[in-house]
Image 1 (tube, rainbow, N blue to C red):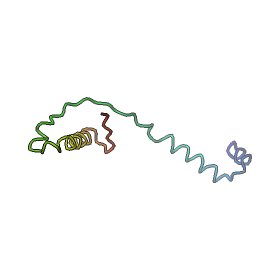
Image 2: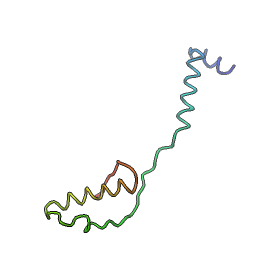
Image 3: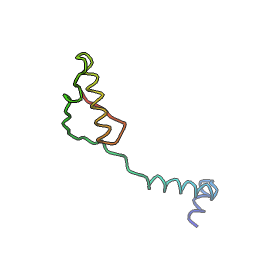
Image 4: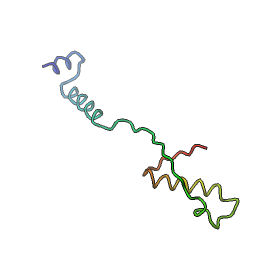
Length: 82
């Protein structure tokens, strides 16, 4: 009865009102926003950069760090703070 009165006040049909109601429930059932995670690891870069030309080592090191973080944190969104 309260739904019907509210629906008449807002000039919505009962069906549209129930769809709006259902949409709100779906939003509540979802996850809360994910918090950023900070972890400390030690990565042995020497073994990853062996036999790499000196001028190419910095770029390769960043790629290796990204690859390690993707594996360790199981995500593709990796941001390195320098």
